[in-house]
Amino acid sequence: MAGTLIYQLQLAHTFQRRFDSEDLSQALSESHIYVISRRPKVRFKEQSVMFYPRKIQFEVTTKASSRASLVDYSLDLAGEGLQQACDFRTYQDGSYFSFRVGEALMHGDSWALAALCSRTTEELSRQEVMYIGMAFGENGSSNAWYRTKRHEKLQRIYEDHVDGGWDIFVSAYEITSCERAAVDHIDDSEGGDPVGFVDEAEVFWDRRGERPSRTAVKLIEHSLIAYFDPPYNKVLNRWQADNPTAEMRSMQHAGFRLIIVHLSGHGSLARFYSRQVKAATRSHVILHDIPPVPRKPVLRGLSAETVSGWRASILRLDDVEGVIEEGELSDIVLHSFGNRAPSVRKPPEVNLDVEESDHRTVEEREEEFERISTIEAQYAGPDFDHETGRFSVGIGLDGVKLHWEVWDENHLLRNGVIMGPPDSGKTNSLTVAILGYLDSGLFVPWLADGGGRHNLLRKWGRAADWIASNPKELELMLGAAVAIAEGRRANGAYQGISRKTPGILFAVEDLHLALDNAPHLVEKFERLSEIGPASGVATVVTVPDSNLARFGGSRKMRSNLGSGHRQIFGIFDGDDLFEDLKAP
Image 1: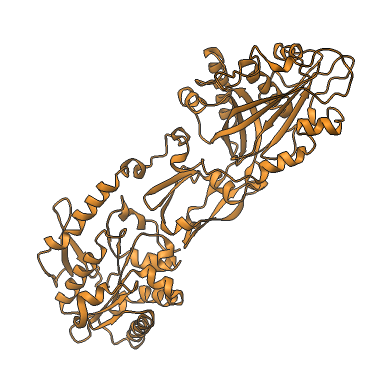
Image 2 (image 1 turned 120 degrees about the horizontal axis):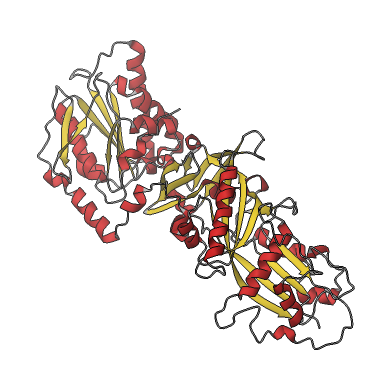
């Protein structure tokens, strides 16, 4: 008799968090096998995060081993949609992150993002297998007693590694298919009927349920444990054909002498290895045999027998390394982040207030934007207060009057940022601000139309002192503003704004579009935002969000502008976005 069982395992998800029994059951409910692994901690360096058009750049720190020195890795996350990315935050000492892309909230484990962006290099992806078990969720195969015992084992692993600089991972795998072949690796002339592999009793696969049988799950668990030999598994660590388990005897009785288990790396970020398996790869092809006596039993299959060419072809063993390589190069499925990942993967200690409060429909958002945009209609007119340097800009949604502060307690001018998505009311707010500055009698408005939409031109016409409606005029205006600020600093005669020496309101609508068209202006904008407040030049801009790319990649400019007056529309907790943006 001759036959081969071929099983395929696919990753459901990798979890990086400490589980209690209930959450672990939920995490493994759709899987059949789980792998507990460890690797040195990977942590975000939050101050390293930089937004660029179509790219986020960041650094992580980790170790090659628990006793090695810390190493920094600089990584990029690239993509067209990242033009809308903003609000990058980290949690739990840099082990978890979140950021927004438009209305979507992306969040997940720092390790997973680092492994993805490194293209799963060994330095960031290798994980050591510590324990392998059968899952115990709804679709698993264990009873309540086994569930309890295995959770105790997981808790012991947590406790053993809590202070050692390690992260512990739980990877849930689904057994997706079972194929049978009427040949195996042994070239002999044994008699018998080689049709046992038909498996009419569904011993090795439940065809009606389209799922593996209990015998199959146990066989695969045994195969994986014998292959990796994890330190926390105390039984099944050897595949002993001369002392078969009940499941191995079922194989023999059905005419199967070889089992092949393909632990697929497709969609996986982890490269598994162990003290037994030195090569850290995303895919593993595992073979175990039950040869007839007097053949010597073989413990691990890749070196089990010399496989003849035609049998190798039928069993798909003629290019084992190719099978592994296929998993290495397969596209990485982004099911580790955002709403595509299981909700239980987020540690309960991570509080994503944005996630809970941002569940609004498009209609609800449009209604909010419409209410916000009516602020101008509620605006009672210019009311600049020369004592406080304040003027009102309208009424908030809570009915409280909102104010703009032109200068601080030291009478230094304040720059300003008006931020919000399209149609959220930024242009209306800028218009009200310009009216407030003009009402003071202390400013002349220099207005720039960064996007070339001519909103400012239509609203102000000749009422403004200077309007730049194209990149060349903007460059001239910016150069003049910097020259005036530098001149006032140099001669020491400037004593503050007055009707004799008025201040300049340098207002730029759609700053990000202006810088996209003329990136060489970033340095001058940065300089003006730095020296302008003490020289009588206030820079006020509108942008869609706090993405660093909106400010030409200049952290200093974003900090100088965002630390002044801020008006945020249509972004939950938007005013907090500038809290940690101080330039280094």
